[in-house]
Amino acid sequence: MPKAPAGTLYRGREGMWSWVAHRVTGVLIFFFLFAHVLDTALVRVSPDSYNRVIDTYKTPFVNLMEVGLVGAVLYHALNGVRVMLIDFWSKGVRYQREMTWAILTVFVLVMAPGAYFMTKHTLEAIFGSAS
Amino acid sequence: MTTSSLGTVTEGSIAQPDQHDNLVIEAPRNRRKRPSGNRSKTNFEMYAWIFMRMSGLLLFVLVLWHLLIMTVLDGGVQKVNFAFVAGRWSSPFWRTWDLAQLWLAQLHGTNGLRVIINDYAERDGTRFWLKMLLYMSSFLVLLLGTLVIFTFDPNLT
Ligand code: HEM
Image 1 (tube, rainbow over the protein chains, first blue to last red):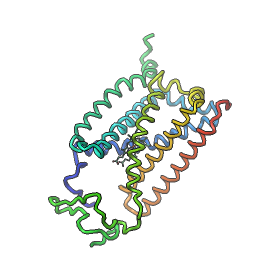
Image 2 (image 1 turned 180 degrees about the horizontal axis):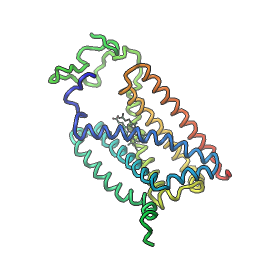
Image 3 (image 1 turned 45 degrees about the horizontal axis):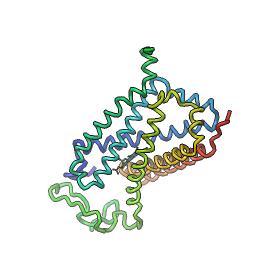
Image 4 (image 1 turned 90 degrees about the vertical axis):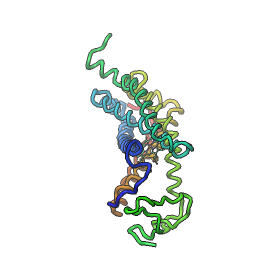
């Protein structure tokens, strides 16, 4: 392995880790998309086989993984906008670190209520419904 | 000029590991001999770069809205079943939405993975076969997904 050149925007700290996370989430979403097109294709086989596979999405464990998947997509989407701002906005490079923290803030603000509504049914099933 | 495993390379375009202080990053618009020795005469990589950004912008709206409807609003994934899909796909608007989403996401993801394979698979043979596998699976996913959207039958039993 050749030694990495010094002085790149992507070496260390927020700039590097946001890139690592962008790459990891991109690959994750890609593989999920493969599975997702296959499971949706079952609507062409029979309503029953489609409903059976979608029922597995409704189980507590898969429901939890769904929160992870939506989180991965949301991060990738927000960071994708940050990448585009670095590329096209004249001050983008200067503020790339601030933008990382900005998208993470948006991420938390969106995921907190999002995760609640995504898992509402699961939580009620496990801890008992209030009503 | 030196010769590396990539072919002929112009001096100064390669980072010298022992010369951290005077690392040269060429201005992107300077034309120079391509490392792959003029094999590629097109601007494919530039169009791919632009496509990642254009498709990313569209996917931002398409995918996040899709996830909001399917996994958050109105009971989340618990409401989804064949009847729900039939209801949505009775509208040409949502069929067009899903078709655009399928193609953009699959092409965006395929190009992303192509870049990643180029980054990490160092042997020519490995790179070639991984990319063949990638393109074959992408082709099948696009074909299957498109067929399903166009031939969906709400009265199927
Ligand atoms: C939701 C909206 C999305 C936005 C805004 C977005 C944005 C981007 C951008 C701008 C890049 C280029 C990064 C660079 O050149 O440094 C990228 C790379 C990538 N995207 Fe997306 N994307 C989105 C959705 C998706 C989806 C649905 C998938 C999977 C099917 C995906 C998979 C990838 C992959 C694998 C890469 C390559 C990562 C790398 O080279 O490190 N993206 N994305």
